[in-house]
Amino acid sequence: MKKERFKLTYIQMIAAGFLGIIIGGSLLLSLPIASRTGTWTPYIDALFTATSATCVTGLVVYDTFTYWTLFGQIVILILIQIGGIGFMTIITLFSILLKRQIPLHERKLIMQSTGTIKVGGVVSLIKKVALATIVIEGIGAILLSISFIPDMGLAVGIYASIFHSISAFCNAGFDLMGYFEQFSSLTRYVSDPIVNYTIVTLIFIGGLGFFVLNDLSKHKLHFQQYQLHTKMVLAMTGILVVGGTILFFIFEYNYTQIDMNLGERFMASLFQAVTPRTAGFNTTDINSLSESGGLLTIILMFIGGSPGSTAGGIKTTTLLVLVLSIRANCVHSCGITVFKRKLEDSMVRQAAAIATIYMIAVLSATMIICAITPLDFMTVLFETVSAAATVGLSAGATLVMGTVSKIIIVILMFGGRVGGLTLALVLAEKRVFVPVERPVEKIMIG
Image (cartoon, rainbow, N blue to C red; front, side, top):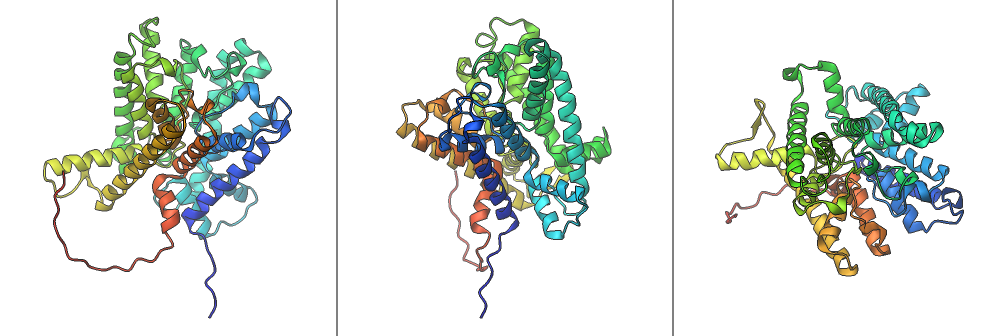
């Protein structure tokens, strides 16, 4: 009797692909050529940075500009781009360039990687993704250069514009503002409308998801023709951005925005509402946020962007399904209806599973890190949510964390990029479940 050959599932292949890219990137970043000191970088720090870049998070243990050489920065930028649009997208593009036929199993991998609903048309979608990425990042770089070139000079300004455009569109949050001051992010440009609105737009577009962008390009402004997924993403994104902007304007009025005029307050509020979903840039000091503003940031980070996008978090559609489920239970509805369409019951179970997995992961990591480091609870919670949701906003905790804490953050970033439910399926997908009907019995809930 032949032994059954070990074969990875599509989900396991995606997880293994990300892991391989992270390991390769960490080895390159540990080389002396990658650091300005010309010495070997401790592997745990190289692994942390490579994971943060590939998982488009933005948490760092070293200032990107002052610690890493041009070689190291380019490695980080490549990892961001691969992590942002997906390694399967890169592989497919090479296959297209080489005019190689793409088999069905690769098409299914692409579908899983890009978060599309159907296998059909995934290759044409990849072509559109590649073209859209080049155009959007190119326009972003041109706009950013208007502000960066006068401040940094021609060569550095152009390079910084390209770097920040890619980092913003991929929702990564890595920056080169160490050119002015270490770990300052975009605080220097808090009153610059070009930088603010360009970065916000790049983050917003990157966080919508390629499926949504394709649907928008196909049907333009005809909302009724959009797919249900697109309608739900746009509705939830609009609520979070508008609601977040208003709340930050109120909460931070006498805190981080106290010395700003009305226009600057609006820009800072809008930026702070968009960046936690899940970019990692900041124009105001994170440590100076009001308690309400800090908590709102954590909530927005936990929610994140939309499925199939460069963003992390539990995703906008997950939150909307949970809210609609609560409403359906309150009004004793027999199902969930949205935009005149009924959702499958399995969607509720999946949404609940994703939110629960993220919550358990964040709270467990927070509890362990609090036990082994002298950091306070809110600081650690901010960092763990930022890692699990692949945001990258930091209260500075990663700079003082020990090896064990860094490993925990690395695991959170990896799990957050691959997806909490996906990571659970990686371990469970090979199991065979025998359907058995059990007796039904009621319990009390709530």
